[in-house]
Image (cartoon, rainbow, N blue to C red):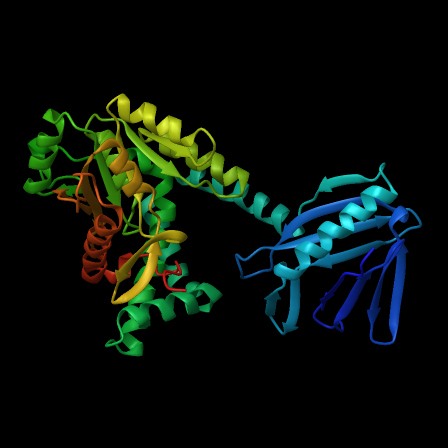
Length: 412
């Protein structure tokens, strides 16, 4: 067998360690120290993805349990400085795959298992506590709780690692703004995120627009939007609506259900199970149909559109394999699913946004139908139409930059 090696610094205070695969086992060398284990001595192999506090990046990790006692841990996360981690997945994966294959050959009875990190358990219990909190404040002045949460977020948010990402993105989008202006915008962002989080507790109650008594409720709707909804009700073509992470973006989907139309909203559920289940329950209670990404997601979308549902999607996020557009003067790639579905159904396109007003109210605005760019065959042209949408979203953000989620890394 050929020798295969892998190098990694497994801990903050450890030296870089070199692992080598041999004919009947593998060895590791850490400076003057080292060790060796036979493939047949490995009785259990646990694989998981690990994360570190303050970062959403995940790294593959493998833990080997020896029949003779003890464990051996190998990770794709190479510690190269204090709180600095290098991803060595490219060399880690071939090494681990070959190691697992040799262990399987030497010990067919070994156990392969998935494992969970301690951080996963903490997040799961924290999510359960958050769910209980949101349910508890539902009938106890949630507006007051939103004020408290916003006050805390404005003070804690700037101390988090995500604040640096948000600041860099905001500075790239608005190079003409001073440092003080950028910080004031980000304070507004943290304020908005905190209020949006608390508002999940009453999402199904928030839409109270009454056309007969305009301006008396929490939701304000302009006449142009009312006219567009009248047009939508008599239209025969499928209608799709896009939105962005502005103000309380969930209300843009609730608006569809509030007008008596089924709202089909493709979502990417959080990895934390308790939080994913609660968001599904909240959205469903508010009249929406959450469709999780998965093998049957596309079929669910087709069925919903055939029933006359309006597809609503958030499209303002980076996607590595997305459509390249110019956004705030810089190139980035956005999720292409919305445009591809619109092309498949030849749907009318609308945009919707919520604007948070200073008196605890929201203004709901809808634009469209938006004329898409079409190719020579008359079909929606994906790249050109995605740019049209990106330009509209940029104009919305420029009006209220403090209400957009700058934590998303759009430019990479």
